[in-house]
Image 1 (tube, helix red, strand yellow):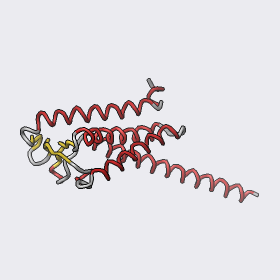
Image 2: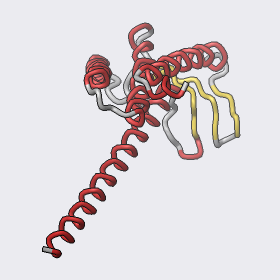
Image 3: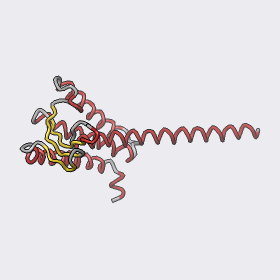
Image 4: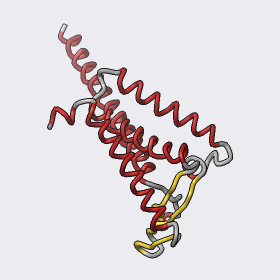
Length: 174
């Protein structure tokens, strides 16, 4: 099991799970939230609210869906090409990339087949946009990717600094 989790295929399974989970929750939102509009989990704090979104995040490009569709398609394909091309990718990079791809594909399915994305998580305590499972995967994946890259950069800088200190110590001995 451990070797599977470190393989290239496990993160792709995560992407598939993201798409399936996203599509199931959107179908449930259409079936149960659309008729009632909103359902408070904690009144005024967190609701499940049926919304349709014709644009990108926060309804950007709402009047230009082809712009966002093109950018999304290129980004998803670019990530997948990079994913399979770079043989040195670690699982710490693979999983966040596949979270982003899975979320992107989940929302892309809606845009292609129904012309809009169904959103339903409504965090009212921060007056935030209504979002969905795919958005969660993209956001968490992007955050994790940023965090991993930041940690790798810090490690590399420390290693360079340490190597430089060792080299400086060697030159003092001569």
